[in-house]
Image (tube, rainbow, N blue to C red):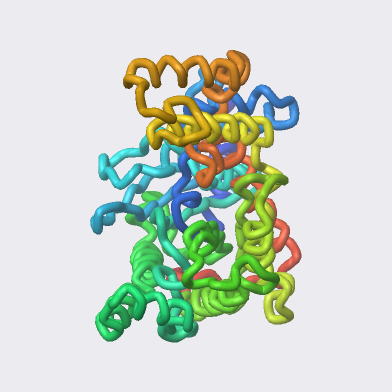
Length: 421
C-alpha cells in the first residue's frame, strides 16, 4: 500500500464518530433536589440489580468487565452539595460515587449513587454528542422555603402556624424575619452554580468546543420528603387537595428556572416520590398527586413530565424493612418499660434486653431475609432503602423521558455559549 493511501485511510478513521461528536454542541442537563437527588444507595448493593433478569442488563451497563463501575468518556458532571453550612463542588467524568457524600468534602467521589449515574449512562448510549450534568442537591430541604422560587413570593405563615407560634410564646416578628432570611436560599445557590458552570463549561469539560457551544437540554427535580411530612405548612395534608400549595410553588419553580436560564421551553422532569411503593399511606398518595399536578397544566403540555418512581421501589426489601421497624419498636417498648411488654417492671438488665432482642429479631427475620437485606439495602425507607436498583431504574426513567421529549420537540435554537453568539 502506498504511503499516501495509508494517510487517507487514517484520516478517514480519525474523522469517524469521535470527530462527529466533537462538532455538535455540549448537551447540558440539570439535576436538583434534596437527599434522594443526592442519592444514598451504596455501591455495595449493585449485585442486587443483577439478581433480576429484567435489570441484569442495566447492571452490565453500569460495570466494566472486571466488575468496577464504568467511567463515562463523554459524560461529565459538576456536583454542588454540602453540609453544616459548607458547600463544595465535585467534578469529573461521570462514574459511580457522585451520590451523597454525607457533607464530607473529600475532593473525590464517594461510595454512593443517586439517579445521576444511570441517567448519564442512558444519555451516553442514546446520544452521539458530549453531555454535561450539573447536579445541585442538599439533604433536608423544602420547596416551600429552601428552594422557594422568586415568583412564588415571600413565605406567608398560615393560621395554624400563627396559632402554634402564639401558643409557644414565640416572637412573631423574629420568626418572620428568620423565615425571610431562609426563603429561597437554595434556589439561589442552585441557580448561581448552574450559571457559574455555564459561564465556563471548559472548566468541567476539558475538551469543550466553544465554537459549537452548549445546549440546555433538560432539568430533573427530585425532592419532596420535607414538604410531605410538614403538618404546620400543610395543615390539611390528610385531606384531598391538602398539598395544593406545593403544586402551585412547583409550577412557579419551573417557570422561574426557565426564565432565569433563558430557556422558555426547557424540558422538565418531576420525579414523583415513590417511597413505600404500593404500600404508601393515604397522605403520601395525596402528596404524589400534588407533585404530578403541574405536568397537567396546559402551559406545560409536551415539555413537563411527571415520572412516577413508586414502581421502582423494592417491595421485597420494603417488607423486610417493616420487620426491622417492629424490631426497633420492640426495643423502644423494653426501654420505656411498656406495661404490655417484657420488662414492664424494669427488672431486665441491659444484657437481658440484648438477648431478648436477638431472639425476637431472629424469629421475625429469617436468615434468607437478612442476607437479602444486606445484598440490596443500605439506608432508611425515606431514602428508598439505599437500594441501587431503585436509583438505577429512576435515573434511566428520567433520562428516557427527557429523550422522548427531545425527539418530539421542534427544532432547537442555536446553541448557547458558542462563538456565533
